Length: 199
Image (cartoon, rainbow, N blue to C red; front, side):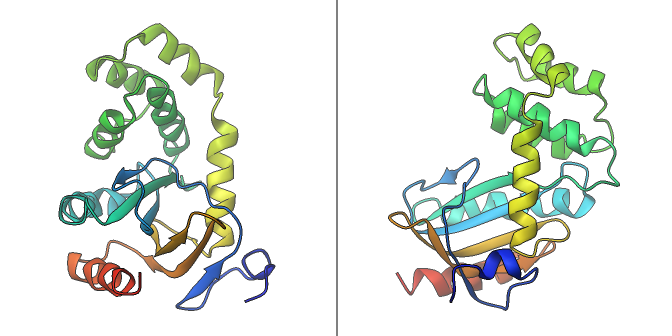
């Protein structure tokens, strides 16, 4: 596969080689695993919220063998999703990413700036004032935009989208495929098992 493939083609075939390092975002499970499931998602997307229990179950079942990553892909027609993604990064600064991440999927219909600041206090960030300043400054907007660009290069056009494959830590390459939508547990399981058998 030539190196320009991801840049020059919007939609990958069912299996592809991603050439070049990919930022894996927020990792859970076995962070050193070579098989990875990388989610591109939107905090206001109903299907993204619907698939979270499945992802939690997968993390529990594959915690020793798979790395689970998360990157932001807020859709333009979800008016508050962009700021919610920034809020999650502001929470990460205070080691509270996962707490806010999970809460945002529960509170999908209430994600105004005021709501987000209240949620930060609910999850007990160390410094609410620092969180507020971070959110107001939009200091992580560039990171969110980069996530969107990277997802788009992989053919992610909607949410949730998942990149599943084998990661080579030496080269940064991933050989794998994209799954779209809130797929049932067995679809994820079948795909993960396929790549685990190739290690």
